[in-house]
Length: 334
Image (cartoon, rainbow, N blue to C red; front, side, top):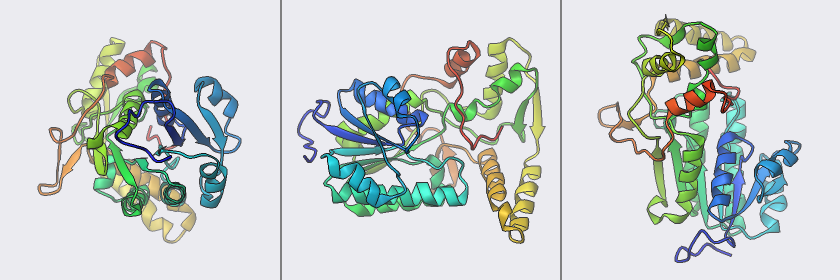
């Protein structure tokens, strides 16, 4: 059944597939879909713990499938039901070139092809705002997937979030242990408008029903002003009732490490992943997660859309008070 945009899209008979449902954003998106009355099927890796997901996402169907096998994905998931839309929250775990190509590009293209072949009308793709200045393997892989989706002929919504709360929370435990907050340079080199998993999940779901969010690339951040790393650290110390203490890491040191590992990896290929991780760290230390003005080459908070209610500092307080925990993933810098 193809999606009829003249109908109310919150009715339960609309069937939505969620890829990458085991991640924090995938779970938040599934919760938002269920809350809005959609019929949801979550695709998860074989052996990833479907029982826990069924408990946490009561009401969603859980299907195990290898997302890197496009033929298997088509026969296991898409051939067994008629779906109206796909929301993909897939992302490589650590940004390493091999993993990025396998997940951010090949798996995504396979999912797009499977969706198109089985009559899916709308594909919502979670990408990243950093692809607007691509220097890293995972960024090029995501851009290739974006291009494949646009060329597919499917109705698409490509969502590029700014920064995630979990990515900016790695130093909470460090500061709680009495250590200084680490800053690259003076802590004012970059800025971002981070968005919570919950608000991002709601935004991804809104792409299904809002005609203004179709066939567009959609940068999105959370509420409030752009935050520098120094501002994040200062507020963290304030929440803990402590005097701010910072340790500055020269950006030149990071450039040297990344350059040295890159040169060494040409001689010792096994170092290529470490070299890429160093480049990832350098990138996030020097580039803002805001909309980039292509004419000036500057990042622009005013041009960066925002949504939702959750703020990073509210999240910090919840972590400090033991109300939530930080799920940071394998690509954390600290």
